[in-house]
Length: 444
Image 1 (tube, rainbow, N blue to C red):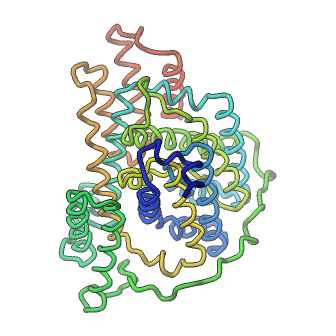
Image 2: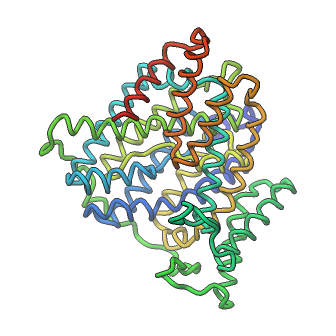
Image 3: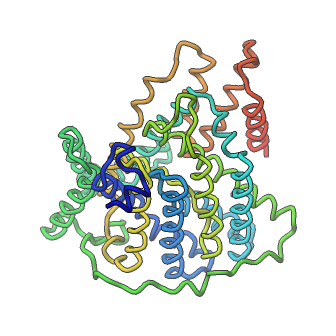
């Protein structure tokens, strides 16, 4: 106990070891899907699925450990969704390059991020985001997380006519997700510590009962997988097929730079958006709307990306699901440390952990959306040059299904409105530079 207190300053942050461990477990449970989803996406490039599973767990554990000890923040890291799809379907699929070349691009991206973090460029960008947009980012991420939860549970589904529509509420998995959401909220209202974590477990147990009684019928083609683990322990697959396989040859320099820039851009603003949103919710920002020791958090992200590429996986980034652990009381690196331990445990207990269904983790994501949207009351709506950028940031994060796209539209509208309404004196040089690169990104 003294070791953890000395490392993470639990009393100073008004938290306890139990709270932090439960928060770390909650974070892990809400992002455990990445253990199988990331290998599933990257394996279409010809990479070994088993090796990818090991790389995903190890890279995530390294990233979480770095966050815990570099920054003492409760943020978890893992190979990012979207970035892995770009890796597999664009760089390797559309462009036709080998996965070894894509890994080389991710490795270089990580090195660039280490440099940018060292010279405070990423910190300057974070600090340049206006206060109202920081609050809006927190709200937008909350809505984005809740929407992901609704999708994962199939409460809302894709629709060709209206983009999204209601799912089949009579489906056992949808019904279980809805029941799980109410159960989780009951635990929250009753101030149960670790409410989100226990909500996940209760929903999963209900699912197992439904499977045993025939209400939930396994149908793999329909995405209805068995909720009962097929085993307990398994040996981790070897990393040998994909580790240290970077290839810097066989690609024109300009194309290689373009690929690196794409990885760099999405990772940079997804990470900054997540840090802004979750930090705002957790109350980590100081009186100047700055995040103390942000350099440690950014270094953790950069080092994890570089190490992940060497292990054989796509860009490792700060996960938006970290908000679930923060909402469960996580306030220090002990939360991230706990998440890291569970990623390592997952290497040996994957038959159990990969059985947790998405409808069991979805209620936690939906409830986190409720927690994070509360910051909307702190946004200044009296000045429309502040209100509209905040509004469009929230809207585009959901509509474009991207944290970084929300920030792009928010920053560009903020700068344009300030300039066109005679308030350009309120703009700082960094936000102007950011807006210029955002405009380039949209045009290109």
